[in-house]
Image (cartoon, rainbow, N blue to C red; front, side, top):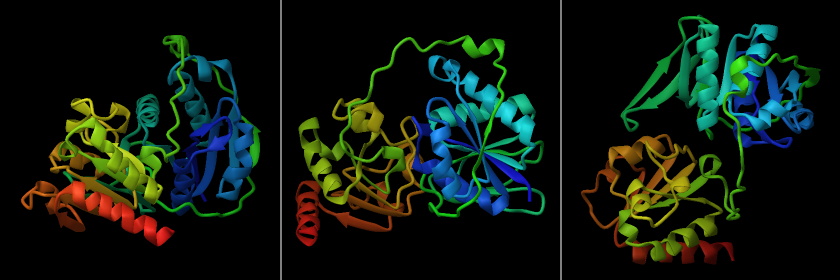
Length: 320
C-alpha cells in the first residue's frame, strides 16, 4: 500500500487534534507516515503510532523555531523525496496552508485546500470541498504530480488504530531562503480556558445584534455552559467588541464544529464562508428575514437577550 505523508501540528510534543484527524483520513488512501518537526518531535511518536502512523520522521533544529515557515517546507520536501508518497496531508491552519502551497510549487504538484472529506479514487485521492456558502459540494482530485491537500479541522473522527510508529531521523538541508525571515519575539496568548476556536466541537458566536462589548458576557456564559469556543462576526470585531483572533468568516477563521450557534448574526456571505461546513447550525435572531435562516438547521426568531440567557439556564439546570 502506498504511503501518505501527514504533517504533524504539535506543541512541544503534544499532538493537536487536527493531526489525529488527518491520520484517520490518511488510512483511507494508504499507510500514514507522520512528519514531526521541532522541539518535542520524538515525543509525538507514541500518540501518532496509537492513531495509525506506521513511521514517524523527526527532525529538530533551531531553524524551525527561529525562522518562519521555509525551514518546515525544506523538511517536508526532504520527507517527500525520501518517501515518494501517494499524497501529502496538512492541517488547514494559516501556517499549514502556506507550507502546503510552498511545497506544491516546489514539487510541481497540484494543491487542494480546505477539504472536508477524503476518499480513495481510481486515479488518486478525491477530496470533498464545500463552496459558495455551502450552496455547492465539490469533489476534485489533483491531475498533476503528488496531491498536496489541506483539511479543515473537525472534518474526520479521531480513531485509534495502533501501528508500528517506528521513529526515523529525517535529514534536512536548509535552503538559502530558510533564514530570510527571523522571528524576533513571541508573546504567549492568554488562555481563556476555552477550546481553540478552529478545533472546538461547539462554537457560540455573537454579531452586531449583541450591541456592545459589555453584552458579549451572555455569549461567553452560553459557551462556557456548553464547553464551547467563542466566535464573533466581522461587524462585532470591527466595532471593537471582541478580538480579531475570534473572528469567524472570510477574513477571519474558518470553523467546522459539530454545533455552531449564531446569535445576533445576520448571515452575510463573508461570515457564512467561515462556518458553512458546521455539522449543525442554530441561529438566534429577531429578524425572521435574516439571511442566516437560509443556512440553518434550527432557527429561533427572538430577542437574543431573552433567548440566550434562558438557553444557558436550561443547559446549566440539566447539567446540575
